Image 1: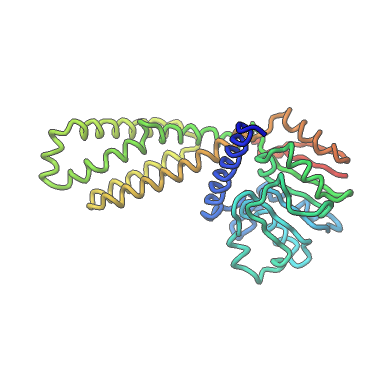
Image 2 (image 1 turned 90 degrees about the vertical axis):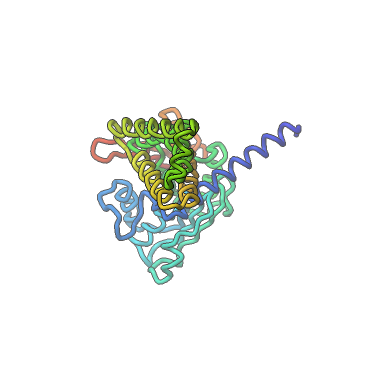
Length: 337
């Protein structure tokens, strides 16, 4: 291998580590999976209904693998429905996972049937050939290198096994939200966006809390320019909010800036700066995740290729579209051997 090859491998590993760390922070923040089966779960969610139908099949049995499990929504739904009769289930994820609901509730029926494997790539599954009767993934497998993860999936699938994959659809409601929120993030994080302008205005606001500081500010063109840009950035957010279908990023950013300003007005300049820096880091993480969602959604050709790769190991595939009311939610890809 050439030096260029080593450099390429090193860069790929670094990107993988960044992705894993980002998603680890996301799941450890307490974010629930789209099929969360806790007390606040939405039973009318078609994703939940899909998996409940899978687990409710007559004579459902056999070891289960969940790829890209996140906070373990599918395993949680599995034991929530089948309890002590649930089959053994292994759940893997690139991120460092250990769901709180699983760690803190050992008395839940079926708890001992679940095993979580964090920092585990779908392209290198740590299981023997033919280990699983059922392999599942929801918004997980499409984030992997499919040319490597699909052969691994087929390797650990039993000769009579089944595969159920729910993957991002480019026309789904989730992608619509992701696209708009990504645009909002780009505007908020721009060099003349709300976050940068808010960071520049904190020190002048701090000085404005004393008569001496006010006198200094009147003769400070830099501070006056910072104020002008901050006001323009706030106006831009207000304009975007007026037409936003999914305004959360804008509203939350504006609220965070308002809290930081209030802290500084109470003479806590460092606290205001730290709050904005923390929010900046969260938005940058979110920006990466939203970009990944958009770039990993599978179009028709992508789904057809996925099906072709799956049938290389034998069996028959079927692709359908999952809807909620009139909105597309996802592709559903089935393989039965």
